[in-house]
Length: 197
Image (cartoon, rainbow, N blue to C red):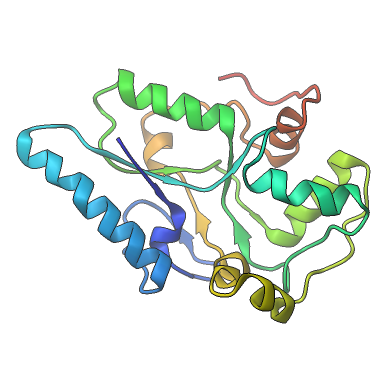
C-alpha cells in the first residue's frame, strides 16, 4: 500500500476527477507520480499494489485541521484566496476504514482516491468549520499573503482539486463521515449523526 496525495492530479478547476484522470504537470503532481511509479515496481514481483491518494485529512489532533483551528478560534478564520477552489477532504476514521478495507479485500488494487464523496469549495469549508466552532468565517486570507508566507506551497492551497472516490464507491465502501459537518463534529470531539461505517 502506497500513500500518495490528490495533488497527483494537479489543478483542474471545477472538473470532477476520479482515479482514471491523468497526472498533473506541477511540482506536487510530479512528486506524487514518481512516488507511485516506485510503488508499482512491486507488481513485477506479483504483489498487489494499492496507491492511496489522500485528500485533506481531518483529525482531532494536528494535521491540516490542527493548523486551521487557531485562527478560527481567535475569530480571524476564513477562506483562502477567492475561496472558490475545491477541497477534497476525508475524516481520519475513513482513512483507517479504507486502509482496513484494502488489507481485507483483494478487489482493491491500483489507484484509490481516499477522499469523502462530497468535496466542497474552500469558502464552504471555512463556513462549516466556523459554524462547528461557533465562530465567524469572514476574514479571507489574500492569495498574495499566502504566497509570501508559504511560497510554492500556497499554490496547492489556492488551486485545489475536486476529487471523487469512485473506486471505493464501486467496491461498496461505506463512509463513516460522508458529509463535512459530521466529519468536523467527529474531528472536534462533538456528537455526530454521520452514517455508520
